[in-house]
Amino acid sequence: MAYPWTFTFLCGLLAANLVGATLSPPVVLSLSTEVIKQMLAQKLKNHDVTNTLQQLPLLTAMEEESSRGIFGNLVKSILKHILWMKVTSASIGQLQVQPLANGRQLMVKAPLDVVAGFNVPLFKTVVELHVEVEAQAIIHVETREKDHARLVLSECSNTGGSLRVSLLHKLSFLLKCLADKVISLLTPAPPKLVKSELCPVLKAGFEDMRGELLNLTKVPMSLNSEHLKLDFISPVIDHSVVHLILGARLFNSEGKVTKLFNVAGDSLNLPTLNQTPFRLTVRKDVVVAIIAALIHSGKLTVLLDYVLPEVARQLRSSIKVIDETAAAQLGPTQIVKIMSQTTPMLILDQGNAKVAQLIVLEIFATDKDSRPLFTLGIEASSDIQFYVEDGLLVFSFNEIRADRIHLMNSDIGVFNPKLLNNITTKILTSILLPNENGKLRSGIPVSMVKNLGFKSISLSLTKEALVVTQASS
Image (cartoon, rainbow, N blue to C red; front, side, top):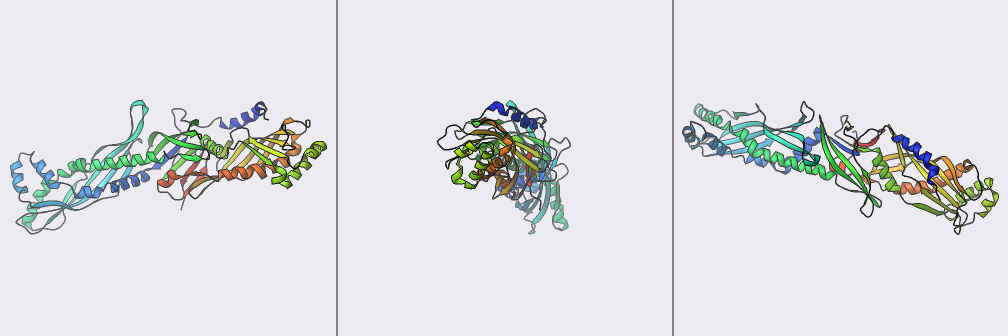
């Protein structure tokens, strides 16, 4: 039987650790431009961008361009002698994704390398032209109605001054003169083909990438009988980092929201990457909710003499020091009941973490008794470790300590609860600790990181969050 007012000052003491906490988002997935570049390059590959380049309608583009000029008839007379003209090879070079000076936009550049060949009736030689041009586009955050923000790609075109058209091989004088005329006709075409043919593919690849990033955040995480779901709130571009700001919701087994984590305040405290390709930052209160959901079990009831006879003997000896009559009442069916009074409190420091729990311990002389001999309120603490095992983020309590013990209720008179400090720690270590660690071992999947292609990850702690990054090689 617990009395909440007994713990008022304890809760105040633990809650004081929250004072001064920075207004950071519940969860932030931070990605470097290198990750964005690799993801976008893969999406372009999925859309077969090389095939798009190989199908560029160069001859048609030249004909359309020539029809607009004052020398249209003359140009057409030249073009009609070209038997065929097509791309013989094409490739897209390594993408570049770089921040713009304002720090709120990213410039994407895609260098294109195309070899085109054409033939005319007067010559048997296939004339090959080397076309180099660079496509560019801007990634930025667009805010629509109801403050809905998303990443978009816009302003797709060719990079000014990037176009080069040249002969791939040396030619005879007459053939070179013809080739030079074809080059002059071809030169206006690539920039327009970039806009009409390549930009749609670039935008489609970007939309696929954006969709994949959103899907990464939508996988619910099972926490025993509860589930944690992340909610995309908004993206933020901060120089060379793209942050995905995420909220979080905790659901019970009936699908009802039991806890909601939101972004507090207008000014966000966003993490830095420190030369890592990605960083997943989980705010302290979200970590606490995960731990609480994993270890939640209600009340533990143990027939102590049957399960842990040596601990039962030590308990009897400890109570005998206080009251010999009460010790004599402890029979073979003596019961220990343990329950957590509040949500655990997580205390983080650089590289270290501690969990504080408020625990109620009841001792019953036999299984027939409806009232305990006494009830203790215990301020317990444990050092906690975080590690990754088989693709799961796993928590583990190293030990459990009874830092303070309070007598909450007693049928054997008032006594100093410090007399039971050793046996209380023994009971918590023997019963509560393995029970909680057994539940914590189920862990939570880190599929978000795995789906980004990172197989080995590293965990670290700040004063406000648990941080997941790529493991150093």
